[in-house]
Structures are given as structure tokens and as C-alpha cells.
Length: 291
Ligand SMILES: Cc1cc2nc3c(=O)[nH]c(=O)nc-3n(C[C@H](O)[C@H](O)[C@H](O)COP(=O)(O)OP(=O)(O)OC[C@H]3O[C@@H](n4cnc5c(N)ncnc54)[C@H](O)[C@@H]3O)c2cc1C
Image 1 (cartoon, rainbow, N blue to C red):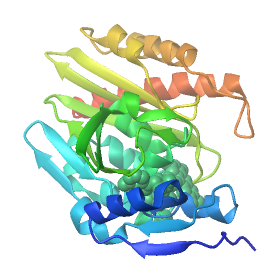
Image 2 (cartoon, rainbow, N blue to C red):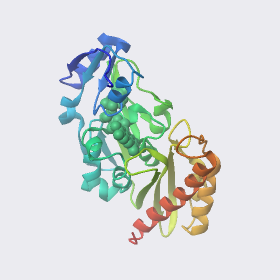
Image 3 (spheres, rainbow, N blue to C red):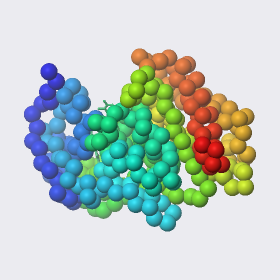
């Protein structure tokens, strides 16, 4: 039987309350959102905390998807299921529904949150790759107010983030630019499993030319990686199979996968290439109304 060590438990009633508790209890305390990453780690005794601060009552404050001119704001407590079912995200960022359809199962998706996914900072985390692909920024709140950290700087390494002591992630901001679409693909060993490799792509077209393109990969190195070299190679060029091939080559040589039970490093590089091609093609087809 897997049982966590003993801990004290308190439900936060506001963001300020949660931050105040984190400040008072220090690094013996952890926030619990959906609990789908933290609790398994505590059951396996990979993590032990004296206090858990439950932030589920903050869903009203942090569970929103808000479309504004120039950006979409998503609260940290927004659950996987809400990301999957949002008509606004389906319209502006179809990459979310693509990714959410292949994250875990309905039980996990009913509870797991955007904030918990990003703060867990697992290198195989799908939503981290989605946020990297979309060029998101993370709003971190502490005792002295808020700071905004771009996704590129949010993950400091596996299971480490820019969220400091007595701070929490409250929102993620996604820039909204006209003429764009996106897509996500994942190879998994069985339905609902973590990725062997996954890739997201976002493209923006004007007069048949790519004004911008971004690719993010998961499970191919210590961090979910954005690939700026692909953006540089694709900007100002017309979409074509040759261009997707070129982008796939960059993805394969830029990533740093490890051989493990999910597959060899060579196989994962092959997947990084293939999934980069497929997601770019799919995002462009969506823009052209062909997918
Ligand atoms: C069987 C199973 C399969 C899964 N498969 C996948 C998969 O295929 N792809 C995938 O991407 N994920 C997968 N997951 C993970 C799932 O997506 C989790 O929901 C997610 O990783 C964590 O979200 P959570 O809300 O449950 O976080 P929690 O477990 O509650 O928290 C995770 C960490 O984040 C911290 N935290 C939470 N919220 C905040 C906040 N607002 N500010 C600061 N710190 C915070 C916690 O203190 C903790 O350290 C799977 C999980 C399970 C159990």
C-alpha cells in the first residue's frame, strides 16, 4: 500500500491567504492544486512535506479563460477539462484541444490544472510544451506583488521553476495575433501515457508567407524546449513540404533526448523530426481552412 507521510492540511481562502501561509510555513509546505502529480510523489515518498495548502477553493479566482484585445489570460487553477472544452481556445489556439485530448484520462483531466502542470516542470509535460509553443508568459505573485516571466525563463531545469519562496503562479498570458493557427501531436506507448515525444507548432501567415512560426517539444531533454532556430528559418518563407522537412531536421539536431524505457535517443530524434513536420503542416492547413 502506498501512503504518504503525515502532513497538516489547510484550505486557502484567497491568493493572499495562500501566499501568507507559504511565507509562514516556509519550505516545509507545498500548494496542492489537482494533486495528480504531487500526491503520487508523496505516496512514493519521493517528496515529503509537513503542510499541504489546498488551493482548490480559489477556482473562482484563478479558474478563468479570458479573451482580451491582444491576449488570452488563463488562470492557474483552470483544469485540463476546461482547457479541452473551451470554445475560445478551440477558435484561437486549437493546439490546446489537440494536447488535452492526449493528456492522461478524464479522471486526471477533471482535477489537474494548468498551474500544477507548469509548476511540476516535468520535462514530458504536454501543457508546458503548448505554452512554450504559444510564447506564453507566467504571472507569479508574492508578498511584494506580481512579476511576469516568459516561458523560456520559467523552467529552471527538471522539476524546478522560477516560482520562489512564498510565491505562486496565478495566471498564464498568451499573446493573440491575427492570422495564426496551431497544432499538437504526441506519440505515446498507450492511450493516456506520458509522451515518448510530442511537438507543438504555431504559425502566422500573411499573403501566403509565414510571418512567424514557433515549435515546442516535450520529452526530448531536461526542459520542454522552444526552438528559436526554427522560427528564424521559417520567417518570411512560403509554407511547403520542403520547409517542414527543413524545420524537422532542425528539431532533430537541436533536441537532447535520452535512451530509456520509452525508446532510444535515435528513435526520439526521428519522432521530433516527424512530429515537427506534421504539426507545422496541420497548423498551416488549419489556417488555409483545409483541416
Ligand atoms: C495517471 C496520470 C497520467 C498523466 N499523464 C499525463 C500526460 O500524458 N501528460 C501530461 O502533461 N501530464 C500528465 N499527467 C500529469 C497531470 O497533467 C497533472 O494534472 C499535472 O501534472 C499536475 O497538475 P495538478 O494540478 O494535479 O498539480 P499538483 O499535483 O497539485 O501540483 C504539482 C506541483 O505544482 C505545484 N503547484 C500547483 N499549483 C501551483 C501554483 N498555482 N503555483 C505554484 N505552485 C503550484 C504544487 O505545489 C506541486 O509541487 C498525468 C498524471 C497522472 C496521475
